[in-house]
Length: 325
Image 1 (tube, rainbow, N blue to C red):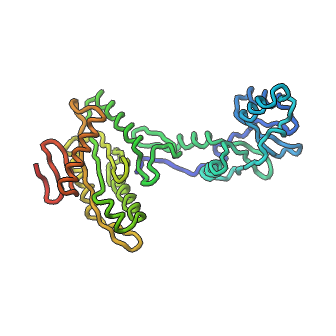
Image 2: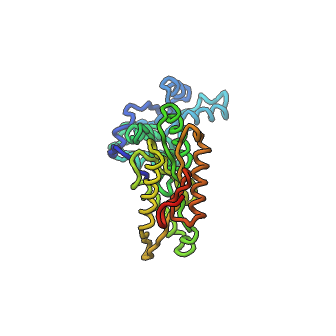
């Protein structure tokens, strides 16, 4: 998982965020009355209860619209029971919102009644849950994101994905252009990764990929952003970091990987990474230019023997015997 700084998390229960006064209607209530309640309260759905006040179904604005289009002039003469969704899935106040969110996803529902001792005590929606996550999870540099799959994480490795990284580079460029503060990016690629897959199997290769992603994330500074750029290639965005500091950071990460043994099902796997870096400047100030320069340096590292860090400033490279120009 991508390293986060100053993150506060507690288990959130349904009772913490559910709406405790849901709008309800009776099974025999006419659709005209149901529609008026939905529109007057500005809601998307309503719980339907029977004569014993037990929930028996749910009716949504979408269901009403489809019914009106199908039935036209006779639509409002029907009752809630005739068009409601009867396969009702409920939650309990003591359920965690993670559990409820998974149940919603599996059953393709957006809202669930909350029951306690066979009594309707509230309603919870997908939006309630995602809003709660946004409030609880706080990333460094005032990044407040959700743990939903759209957070920007690469779910295979646990670091950020390419889209998120590109947005981060855009943000750093905008900040540097205003303030003059430098930042740098480092592109890293696993050496001979195909050979790892061919020799030890793809599951072992996946394990190595995840472990290296974890190393780059956990051994990098808190202010850095680490992401997967594609395949076995990663990118690190390092704010407030000049050429020398970036170069030494990259060399330290390269060395950590080179000295590591990755164990998978009794197999001991050794591999290395090559890295290329670039630094924002007034002359090199566009995202495409910065990425291309780092990628060119990475290519130089790969073709010059691998397991090294390359940059243009002359061209310096580290690993396998130190620096060269």
